[in-house]
Length: 234
Image 1 (cartoon, one colour):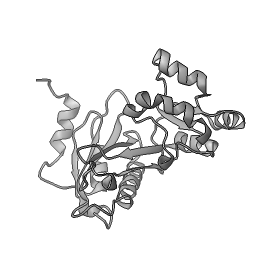
Image 2 (cartoon, one colour):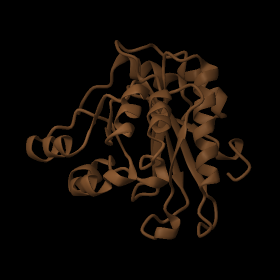
Image 3 (cartoon, rainbow, N blue to C red):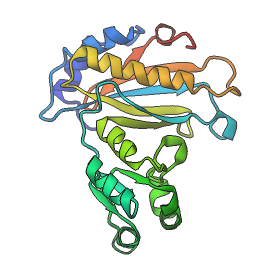
């Protein structure tokens, strides 16, 4: 059995496993933990009272975090003509059409973390469904990644737009900040995501919607958050 690191044990010693923390209290606690040799992510996990097997209980969306993610996403854009130029000027890392689709299909090229496309390029992107879909990279108009406003989409994603989606267990996992962020920024980002997920509550969801919430770092333990302290729909 792998041995826990000294950092992990130090963090664990400060967490009361029987206690439900307020969000700000949990963030403040994380900021007291020893840091790793890299800038860890601050992650949040929300266990929702939904059954994702039913389409009318799927929870999925995207938002721009108030303080960004602390990470520069590598963005691939499928566009042509003026929209190609617009994407490049907005800061897209890769822009093209058939040639990029062929590179993905034939060479297994995956040096990107977000895919955005103009509506007229979806015939090309559609051929990549079996490659992009399982990785959660397929452009989707509901997430703003299929859009004619390509410049804005690229800018938002570069500024810290995150996507969230409930998994088959009814849990949403999302990185909301870096440990190096100050406590107020971490709290604001985490709170913004929670509020977005509350607003995305499906009408078909019955009973308690926010069942469990946990805040953690990449190398640290989880801190249980009291769902009744975050948002009126908890």
